[in-house]
Image (spheres, rainbow, N blue to C red):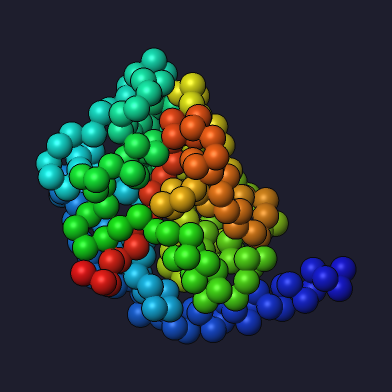
Length: 227
């Protein structure tokens, strides 16, 4: 009981502090090559996308393969995107699910001026919001419109607006929408749980197991301030 009380106090303090920082709300809007509009949000020294990526093209205009069924998703070695359960209507809220070949492709999937986050970017984000043990509550979208009800519902004090878009496995089957959110980094992925106040890293370590290259996860890009 004492452990939970300390955690809740830390979460309250972090929430009040970060909510004060972000009282002005979201920052500028921008578009991807398809014309989809996104909001940006500053968290510490970083600027993140507030929505999940929805582009269907690389920055040079080349189309990314659209996998409409399981057999198309399982084609190895090509960049592809899909919708959860092949349901196009879900893309508006949750964005698209992309395989690893989209992340590693030199044509670049992130909108110009943006990039796929690294593990170091994620560590900086978690350090800013306090600790991994309270990060998810501060980063997850508020309420139960998209997330299942739980004891660790998000308050979204940061404006990061993490969503439970689920994932697609190597066989093209979809799982965990409304429960878990999975996001690519340049090395692996990170995951939000609806039942936990923690963020788990490297669910899919693509360097260790090639099958994860065909997993479909969401993407949140980070502003490339070096350009």
